[in-house]
Amino acid sequence: MDALTLLASNLALALTLFAGLWGLAQVTRDPSFVDAFWAYGITLMAVSSFLLADGWALRQQVITGLVLVWGLRLGTHMLLRWRHEGVDRRYGKLLADVREKRGWSFGRTTAFFVFAPQAVLMWLTALPAQLGQVSSDAGFGIAAWIGITMAVIGIVYETVADWQLMRFKSKPENARQVMDQGLWGWSRHPNYFAEAIIWWGIWLITAETLPGLFAVLGPAFLTFTLTRWSGVPMLETGLAESRPGYADYVARVSPIIPWPPQRPR
Figure 1 (tube, rainbow, N blue to C red):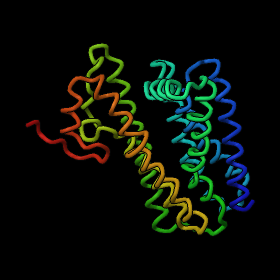
Figure 2 (cartoon, rainbow, N blue to C red; figure 1 turned 45 degrees about the vertical axis):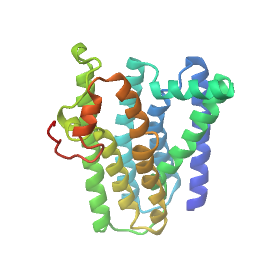
Figure 3 (cartoon, rainbow, N blue to C red; figure 1 turned 30 degrees about the vertical axis):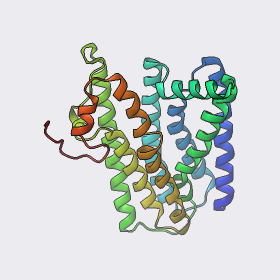
């Protein structure tokens, strides 16, 4: 299957999946679970590409294997977090703002502001997992080995960061407190840092092929959204309002790239 046909097939798959999730949200009245299916959906597209593309088998196996480990762990973690914590305040605020300004129903708001855009943006982010499986050119060069190393380190780093935060939140005495321990003492969003290096790493594996070079749009968009759009800016607005001492944490600790914290003035 050629690259364009593969991308079109996976886009149709993404839209179908998220249409079903939109229907589920009409029952739960909460679209927050969509974050878990972002990871699951990218995993599904990696597997779909593995089955449909005719690229070099080892490259396909490495890319799909890395995405499977990343996506199944992260998706399950986020799904369990949603079941435990309930409505994500970011989605709650988004839905309230749109419905207040436009008077739209819950169904229309979630369709146009949550599920439809998420499906397309998920497909865009997953470009390395798709285009990296098309070329039949064999062999791994230096870029691919660097990419594999980055992806593995990122998966481990993200797992540790999520585990540390989950353990912190499980203690009642930490309610409304700022998590500034472990990896979170060197970066306010170590999970975002890990996410970025995972996908830049996977892109490096694909970049040794011509179709894979064009997949750079995936990690570039992901980095933008984590740092400038729905990641740090949106999340930290809510944390600054709900966590005493968060402003001091922001002043001391690097936003994403791990760095020794500054001493309090």
